[in-house]
Image (cartoon, rainbow, N blue to C red; front, top):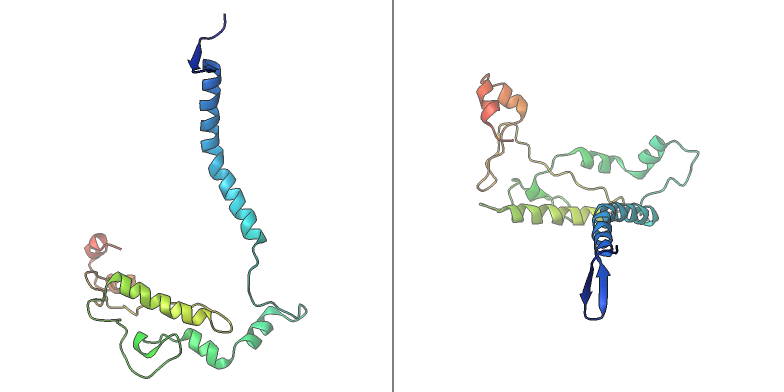
Length: 167
């Protein structure tokens, strides 16, 4: 006995075929993300990465790194510079690190993006690490609190503070 058929105009599908289509859709729903990830991995492998290449393979990497950066650049990489004295073009001689009073999160993000855009255009393109030296806490973020470093919280000798602080 054949399964009942569904007829739409002159087009008919048996129940078996409908079940097959539904089951294929479920399989595709599971396989499609895996396919996309594979495609992304292949694309990433084929993409050309722009980076500094060690032209002298016999030379040790440490020596190549020493040759890439001047002492001034190395010191600059390790220096925590205030925001108001730094720009995408260089460093001036004023103080302070808040973009503006009551600065929104978007203002902070725009400031960091401006700096990163400037440093990426330099010869080595080493990104800037942005941070706030908030050992004792920070209140320059409008409508937000940055808690002290964990060592500062521990030094209070009040363990309940660690339980209630929202990190």
